[in-house]
Amino acid sequence: MAKTPEAVAEFLNSERLAVAGVSRSGNQPANPIFKKLRDAVLEVYPINPRAQEVDGVECFPDVASLPVRPYGEAKTGAKLREIVCMLLAGLTVSTLLCCGNLQRPLSATDDEIWEDFEQWVEGVLESPAEERASLQDLYIGYLVESGLTAEKAQWRMERIIDLRGASTERERIYWNAKHKLGDGPAEPLTLVREAARDSPPGKALDVAMGNGRHAIYLALLGWETTGYDFSPESVRAARALAAEAGVNITAVEASHATFDFGEEAWDLIIVTYPYYDTMDSTWPPRLWKAMRPGGRVVFQGVAESDTTPEDFERLWQPFDLMRCEILDRGEDWFEGRESRTVKLIARKE
Ligand SMILES: C[S@@+](CC[C@H](N)C(=O)[O-])C[C@H]1O[C@@H](n2cnc3c(N)ncnc32)[C@H](O)[C@@H]1O
Figure (cartoon, helix red, strand yellow):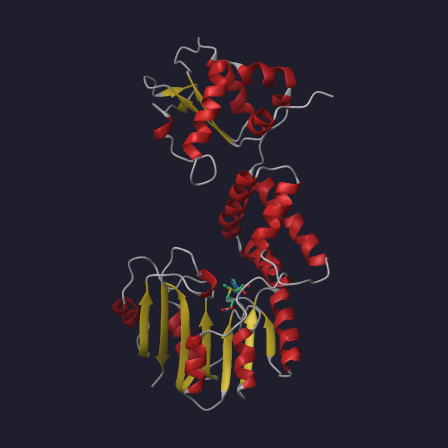
């Protein structure tokens, strides 16, 4: 059986392509290629320095002007240029037409990308829990085994991160897989340790507790602790880890929208990387209502690029901010990533 050359196979798997040499009148060899590819590939960009549009599609003067990168960070320009050159040489054209590969869609749509991920997650959830593992590494490994290039697998993983934000259900599927794999920091944050050290134990709430690292840490110090999270795997993990540590915690499966915070119910509320918008102004009043007088919120999360401590002071009124620090680096869940971190302790007088 004839074997498709690797470069051609990679080309046939493309989701974004550029076609150079298309003309407005449609009389260039590149035009039928452009049309054929447009029917089969997710996104095809025509390139012609003198045309505004070709066949109703916006045209770009050169590769550098394209609005997107195909995939991967570093050598994206090179990748597109390679494809463009192959087309110009006519090499790919004949191969494509001979293979008949253009009869089927060449690329996965966003829905297909997500469905594939969701199916993979089902497999993860059904498998016995093993050593802690990184979801990202495992999924990329699976994609490469399925035949994608490493670069494309990485691109797909990044797409999953974008696509999961489309609904709470998708977020839950994503987090379920993370928690099943034990993917995430296990040690309590220094900020939480310091805050817990400074006050006698009482009732504590851990918001979106993940694997329950803070709920369990506080329970070990004698706090009566409740944590909630919308991921059933998070609740399972937190219960199992609490049993391993020999402490009781109340672990509730609930979302930010459904959890009942109560009124003046807590002495300490832990909110660390909670997956709501850090500047969401509905949260401080919600936490204020739930907090007993004299109680404190310990908050650590991602700060937007332009936020200042004064922004947080305004946002958290009428809490008294005992501490508010913004760092120009990612920590913990965002370690090693380009990010900013806000740490604050807010007291209800
Ligand atoms: C980055 S993890 C942080 C977990 C934990 N607070 C910690 O610091 O380790 C984000 C957590 O938020 C949970 N989560 C995301 N959206 C949520 C929602 N709408 N309601 C409840 N939990 C949510 C996820 O399941 C995940 O456990």
